[in-house]
Image (cartoon, rainbow, N blue to C red; front, side, top):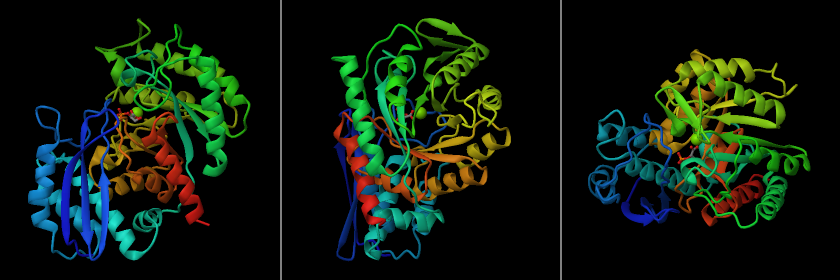
Length: 401
Ligand code: 2PG
Ligand code: MG
């Protein structure tokens, strides 16, 4: 593949913050990609380059300047060759010089352009590159937003409806549950990820509300992203003004999984609390859980940050049994695929994820389908940029026929 032109610019994300968009031209075709941005970011993530005022002009300038000078007019035999060149050009361990945001935007645009040049759907190109079997991911629809995504009106960051099956069957169920929940909640405000952001006085109430709606359908369950690094300080987790030790928090999770149909718990502890993860996974993450035949997934996000070596180390010490994959945590499609390989090598499932600051780029839908992800976190149904991911999955279902 030959890159003939590159242009980059700054566009607003769903929070109105600037992010980078890159367009690549190859032959007569053009492919555009933009990158999302997190708020509850893990400290071990790749470096998102921001100007002092929060803008991305420096990242845009790197893409239009150094990166364009290096890749435009050049022939690449493989996409890995292109990504490796970008990683080497940056030269830092966390992409802090050129910016992981600049590098990833180019990397995704290149993947999209290559698929277009080949005349195949993006998800198929990703599956071929990754050596994975494509399949429809479970929808992880974030119906209630809390934590830093909603000024901590709810203690955990995400209360998620999980729906299994083909997207054309799963999405109508998600829409129905989302609408019914909205009616029950009245005029609840919306959080960052397009889910409701109500306020409750106890830890159980959000589950008490959601569980009966989930029970109306088969193949549905509940997931949470605790995003516990955000309510952890000096050995103590604080939920609704009450302090919990790691052991007490373990009991909270155990009791919740006993009472409610919980399918997965993401980031139950802070990002460096590896031992607490291991204990929880041993307690409720194995098949002998009180959910009967079910298995609670303990998902690493801030813990593993889509980094193949952090995933391998979490596997060694049995900290988790599922991994969240966010391409912008690592900064290139090549390395995101390596993270998927590390996940599967450990015998874990992968859940592909958007970020809380999104754009209309639907790459994550193709990625989730292409890698045969267990699930896709793409947010609530109350925001256009989240809906676009689900709409893209519907299109993929047609393409895959
Ligand atoms: C998460 C994400 C996405 P953020 O913690 O999983 O839902 O949030 O993008 O703010 O890190
Ligand atoms: Mg998370």
